[in-house]
Length: 255
Image: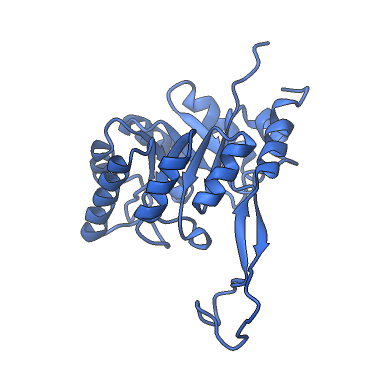
């Protein structure tokens, strides 16, 4: 049996995380801001520095805000400008996903974004998991010409979405890559590969790094009281976690 060509994509929340991902053996990074919101477009400075320092593939998410994937005309214009900016920086690919109010793939808006991204790789992100019909959506995304779909199989975590992920991989064939993501780690990646047939996987490989602040004001929270975020801990991808996950995937005798 021919050994599969497995690839890890790391969801990187900073240039620091990008560099750790590369050090750990990642094939590609997806650079995002706003991780607690599911990922939003990173800053120009992050894109520029990541591209200057990285030697592996660099994708960036194009998402102007958290929340749903039903975008206004103004938000569409923002995304088009962000794609132009990403192109000018020299990133390898963009990660997009627009839906209609009925939970279907918005062919018009996505096509416009893809045309602006001509020459770059295009991933359809987990907006896919919010679609009404995954199989119809798969066909629409194939029709659009995207290179891959990032999905948890319609569940909170990829492990829970294995039955749908397996079907998506089978239906996709060689037309498009199905890339499981959400909750992927060293302890479950070999199982996910075996059960789904997928060859690309998306994970963060992060751990909390404690802030260097000595003085801390306990009375003020930047995000307000309703948002529970430890403002004195910084999540950072770690090369060792990436490496451990890659070993767990590629050295599994069942693969």
